[in-house]
Length: 177
Image (cartoon, rainbow, N blue to C red; front, top):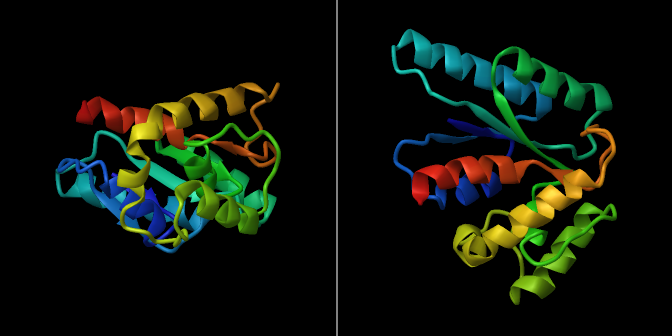
């Protein structure tokens, strides 16, 4: 199960994998409230004797308070929930399909850059983003791994830009390929 902060952008991307054994939930919740919701969904599935073998929360650093972001990571770890975060926003993952970025970029600049790279106006909840980017997925994974490796300490709240979306993508690819 993948529980996403966004109600459309992230779910539509992950639904692009077309995996029937993966439930994708878009919530509109953020950071720690998202993880709380995932914990409840995980418990409900266990009570119904239909547990998920993995639960993931996908969320952004955005401009949420540091405590909320860090609490979400800690709470997820305490409940054996995996996290795939982006600092600052999910669109960083999209950008990494084209280029390596090691400098912080504002949310508005993500959109402007994507417009030019995609060759069409980027819409936040675009239904075809997975299909638009899938051929460049290996590039994005390499760029995300390289990006994380540049930081001497893993400090998600301060490592900007950074993302671990590639970890979830690699896990999903195990079921696709």
